[in-house]
Image (cartoon, rainbow, N blue to C red; front, side, top):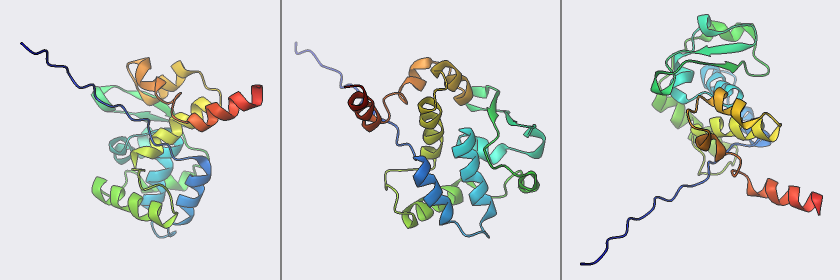
Length: 173
């Protein structure tokens, strides 16, 4: 009898929007598209998933944080309020835009900003995670901010940017 080998699923590195790319992305969104701009800011600045972005309401906003109710797997967590958050943004919450429109808008403005076509809306969350780790926030704290139950899920962001690893190596040697 022939042994059947299981194929191991290929786990790809997350595609993270970099800070300079986020600036280009935001610059392509017309000022009339307030909800789109705000949703991108929440995902990139707080690490929220698209479903969490759509559920944020005024009551969840505190002085410098957002209380995330009904996170994935029913977990609750607290995330930082994005830098540059203005009190008038609270008037737009909860956002009156749907998931598909946000995803479509991300593809549209991402293309206009000439970002990688591998990026998705979720790449904004990946950008938050990668930036947090690169800024020196301990991985266990990033795990809490992202709402990951297992540290190995968060650990993929450590490997997310091999170019940074190469630069660090070159700086040391």
